Length: 463
Image (tube, rainbow, N blue to C red; front, side, top):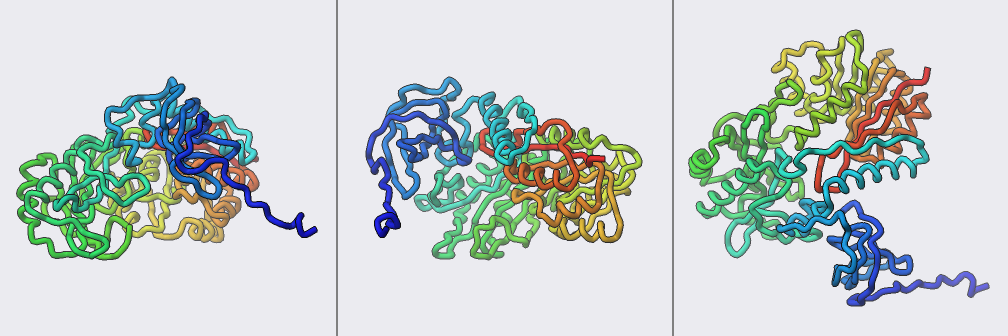
């Protein structure tokens, strides 16, 4: 009997530096290819499903290992050869080696598989993509580090804190790239130092740039570890010369020992405290700390889709939960009687109110509160809504929120998700509250060249 109870440790079928020929069967969420040797998974950088390669094992852990391609035996027909391998090695664009149509198909399949895993029979539409899936990001937050005695900007090598200096980021708007380069050059010329996390010495932690694609307005934010910034006047003079589109230059102070990029303290060095952008005919003021979608092209498609799915009527009362700076609320306000927006982040609600006033919208009320708590409060007060829009963080909806929906009984709920795994889980729970999926789940490629996919789905109350 003692023998039967003894745990037999299984040894990995490979060891470091072994060479094995294997097929790549899948991609991980980090964009690594997956191969299996006698059921033991190996994660392989720059490998695509359907490829066969000779792999060299680089690291072996208890339940999985890592490998690199030694020799490609059979490449994928969807492989794209990149001139600049940096996009892959830094994780800026982990899918850049996969053709764009194949990226869209992979994302559709991911959404379909997650709903299947949740045992939900739904139809998943083809992923809505972009005409040009590069240089789309209107915002960048780039770390600064001292490299060979001078301040450099770039991206960390994947899985490390080693900075790789770079001039172009492949997925960022060229105006954003230019702003980062120009700011780095000016800081170098003036001898400004980068902050060192270990010693606490140095000044600049990050350079952030935001660009309003509709307005052509550029904001540059220099994130510093202390308030004293002796060269800021000289920086301002040089940047005004080199960046004609810049209308705002801000110093953001982040003194905390943290990996959070931005602090809450902003000092306007020059220009306006905010830039303006437009989305679906509405104007938005965007400050250094404002949440604003980074891909305005697909955001417009996503919000138009959500609005159309909601089948809005002039008599409708609408709730926009997790409303941020009010983008969905203000997009639909013209089409309904009343909009109620709720968001836990107070500065976001201040922005939402400011944006409503900017657009002459008076039928939208915004409240600072935790969305599930506020939904319960409204439900207990007997308030109801015809339509609820939800665009929650990656963790999805709470049971409290879903229960409150069950009490309020809105006719329609439109769910915009940045995480299809929690979307599938939440849809299953909403079905138990008396809802059903109306139409198809629609994936939208909000972040081309990365593994992320957004999805939107409409649920209706079963009468």
